Length: 426
Ligand SMILES: [Zn+2]
Image 1 (cartoon, rainbow, N blue to C red):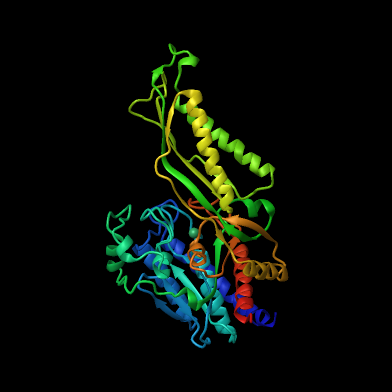
Image 2: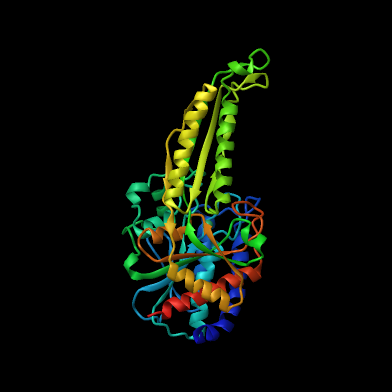
């Protein structure tokens, strides 16, 4: 592909600068230790935005922050038309890693900077978007910047959400940083040809497969019971025979193990998209004791899949098991409120272009499902979307999250070539 050959030397130069930019933002948002903390609509997230703006403007790109602080980066001479867009988010979880979000946001700007330096003329305009507030710990909900920008939610609807650390409202935080929060949606999905997100993998599969790149097949949806309870009866640990126990710990443990066996069965039948997690499991510290049979357990259930039918079947399995275990053990389950999201299909056309790019560049790539990212907000608005995953070490949402410069540059190259293919496609 001629355009990519022209781009390549500029991309390698800009890519090295971009890696230094990511490191420098990390160094300046590393307090309090450990790890990286860039709260949604905080001074630290704002620092990251300002550094990205400076990087883009130094490379003759045009930057427009929108009403919610998302950065829209364009090339001055691009033609009008539906844009080939890419981006990710600038915030982090508390004491998280530097690459989750930031690496993809900077990569998108890097592609535009290199295209500008190379003087590429393309059929479609390129757009890089650095988004705000993707991580849910701050306001209790994810994708705030992209949701507001694309009109999934309005500020009047969610402006009263309070940030966990400051206790202040979302609208208040926006105002304090000088973002008007109005008008509402500022990016019309009809103006986009497609949206590609480059993101770290956050899991161990690429490392295990010795592949620097993943190409997401779909974004998992989930069914979640965040605050379930099981009530049994407290009893004397020595005096109560097994036949008379209504043990809440064993009941929830049996449910968790049944779900794990169900998961293993799905894997055995070739379904690698399913996940199941009991992330919370606790007795009541004001009542529990080593010498008491547990009378109550609080827990959470969280199952995910890329296929709606698999999610529905898992949900039915959970309800059947709850009924069976209740009868067997004399306990009462209350699963509490149910929340969840639908799986999001990703674009077969973009997956094909990304696979073509990875193979043309000699970069081993693995097709795999992924978790929720800003790209889901675009796909749910009918924009063709794709997620490319960079190999990273030590997982994510923790201070040990890690990535090599070479893997970052491989991701940038595949992203760039895929964007050029999309921007020149008929
Ligand atoms: Zn992320």
